[in-house]
Every structure is written in structure tokens, then in C-alpha cells.
Image (tube, rainbow, N blue to C red):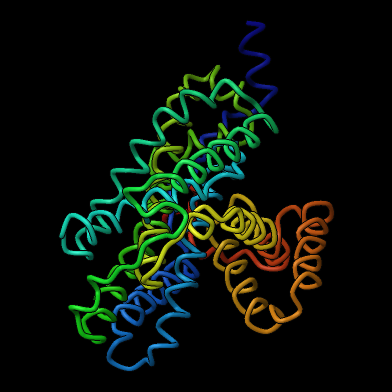
Length: 348
């Protein structure tokens, strides 16, 4: 009787049904960005039909900057691995491509793809050595590995030591054939280094990466194999960085140890990611454009220009950690590479 009285006092139970919902992954801005991305890929691939040789070289350089920065962003922004020695993979892949093409007689455009074996193989033992280090010790360790490889290459007679190598085999191809090959490789590189991380972040591994980025200890407690995931990201970033290095030096037609293992590769990646936005694919594209045009317009000022870039990086790290893309997101929510899952009312 007491239960009946309470039920009568509370009134009838609420039987209102909640509206059906569905998980939304794509956005209008994402669809537009995807369309523009496809157009950009076709534009890069078709450069020999409409662009000058100088413009092709500039676009190749920009694409390489984007690729290296995206790989560094994947390492630091998601796996929590801050490396200042990514130039080691640039140099190893580029030298392997030169050896295959110039000394072994392999088609240079095929050699670019085969050269990816070198950074992948190098990434395995280097991670075994470095993964026990943490924070700044890990970063310093990556720089030491890069310097060791630079010095070893400088005294290795098979690759002509410190004098470097020239890709003379490319003279057997016409300027149009070289432009077509490099342009297609650049389009493929963008697809792999930009589309690959986007696909990864939209997969179930993307949730694990985001969890690992926010709190590795909490992610591990929820079943994420942090060690294995970091290792896989390290190897993937090595391959992507190596691909950029092989394509870049194929376009340059010459390589030397100081240029191949140049620490500026890491500096450029750090600047692009920090200014554009750490942990965002969109930020890397913005940061790469900022660096590319700043280099073209102000590179003539030498040391002063580099100091300004360093101060800008420091300013963004202290006062705008989300970078330019983070500032944009505070004004408008329109992701170019949407990875979040949203519940929306299903009106169908």
C-alpha cells in the first residue's frame, strides 16, 4: 500500500521516447576540403603539362616540407615522441636511392620506392636503443644517431665519402620524363603522408592514439598497448620522412652528407608544426605554407630571418599552443580533416 501511494503521488512514469540518433563522422567543411585535396593532387600530378621547371622545383620542395612535418607531427603530436634527428631517415633513404639508381642500375623512379626499405630497417634498431629514454634524453638521442650516420657516410668510400654523389643516370631521361616522374611521386607522397594519417586517425587506432596523446598512463590502463603503438608510429614516420628525402634529392640530382643529414630538416618540421598547430593535420598544411613563403620572401636576410623564425616558434609555444589552426578553431568549427564522432538526431 505504501508503494502504491508513492507511485500515485509521483504521477505516471515518463514514457517519452528519445529521438533516434546516429554517429556522424563527416562534415560539410570536410567534404569541401576532400574535394579541394583531390583537385590539389591532380594539379601536382599534372604539373609537367602547364608549369615551368622552376615552379615544379618549388612545389616539390613544398610537398617535401609538408611530408616531413606531417610525420614529425604524428610522432610528437600523437605518439609523444619528440625527435630532433629525423634527418637521419631523410639521408638514409636518399643515399639508398642514389646507390640503387646510380651504382646498381635500377630505374631511379622505382629506386625511390625501394629505398623506403632502408629507413624502415634503420627505425627498428634505433627505436630499440632510444625507447628507454624519455623527454629531452630521447630527443638528444635521435640527434646523436643522425650525427653518427652523417659521420659514417662521410668516410664511406662506396658512396664517395664527403664528396657526395651525382645522379648522372637521370641524364638518360628527357626533362619532360623527369618532370612527369617527380610530379607523380610528389602526388603519391602527399596521398601517403597526409591521407595516411587521416585514415589512421579515423580508424580504431586513432582513438588509441588520441588517448595516448592525452594521457599515456590512462590509455595503458584501458588496454592500449602504448609501447607497440609508439613503435609502429616511429617506423611509419621514418618511412614517410625517407620518402620525402628520396624525392627531394632526386629533384636536386646531387647529394652530400651535410645536405642529406642537415639538422635543418628537423628544425623546419618543428617550426611548421608549432606554428601551424601541434596535433592537427590542418595546422601542418598552414605552417608549411607560412614557412615556404617566409623563406622565399625573407630568406635573404640570413641569420636575422632564422632568429625571427625561432622567436615566432617560441611565442606560439608559450602563448598559442594550438598554433594558427587552434586560433582559427576558436572562431569557427570547420575541420578540414574531421576525426571526431558526433551524435546527431536521425531525421530519416
